[in-house]
Image 1: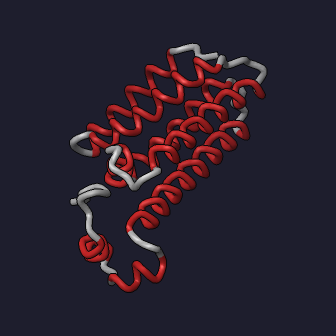
Image 2: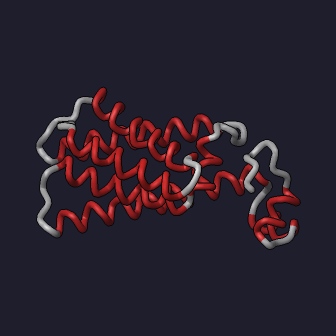
Length: 170
């Protein structure tokens, strides 16, 4: 069971990972560095899979920005479903000092990317709509991570994407 940043100690972390304290400190300066590295790795994977899904949809002839966004959102949520325990730790607001600023900057950058995504498609997405849309997806990822089991998490993700598909966001 993952405890969260504050309650986790280095010994528990290396035991769970099947590693040694020395190996952790060989690769990281401590648990804060490990936490941030895991967060960046998760974000990198989600970003890469989202971009791939959108590119594949475009290659298949999809041009509607809302449908492209849904393809990206599905890929993003798939990463969150696959790594629910890790996402739940990041969603708990229990991170190292300064993590809130990193998280907030990442969210602001995501809002900007979504707004520019729609602008490139020729459809304006107001900044406020971008904030709402991005915030909804981020919150959905957190709720998927906190769902009691994988089946409930998938149902929640599917239902939320169905609702989003019915909205005209641009």
